[in-house]
Image (cartoon, rainbow, N blue to C red):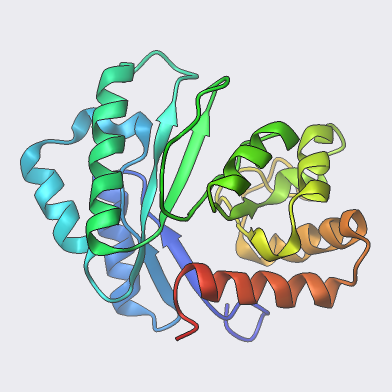
Length: 223
């Protein structure tokens, strides 16, 4: 990807198995960093032993965040109590090691997450965006922004200040137009940039620079 407009990649874990893959890629490629965490849909696999392993891996230098974590009530399993238990444990971990989280929160209605650390969240409307802005969150924007039926997301992006937006791939899903339905990759990000520039009424270069600067700040790579 270096040489193709992608300078750094934060590869995000979602299960214990995918976290192991993230760790392998972090070691293999200089430009790949990681976020280590267990997605709510995979929390049933967590135990005290595997959580201890997770905690150890999160403290590695190239691990920039705890994620992808959160709450997902769209599906009935795992049960809500299991999801909440491990979400809170991973939030505690992030606070302890002083790293941001990457959070997905789906079908949460009006639930307000009382997190006190920065995070990214990518399923929201203008109304929920205000809540997360007040809490200091950054917003990861991906291919959905280019969809014709993404009216609420476009309204949210218009509302969110540019200094609180970063770009995300969400591979392998949700490829932007004109590649919707195909396997997504970071090479599709220019389509997201173009859509965002139009919505924000700024140039594509201004979007690139802001997203780059915001990413460095969020992941504390600007020191």
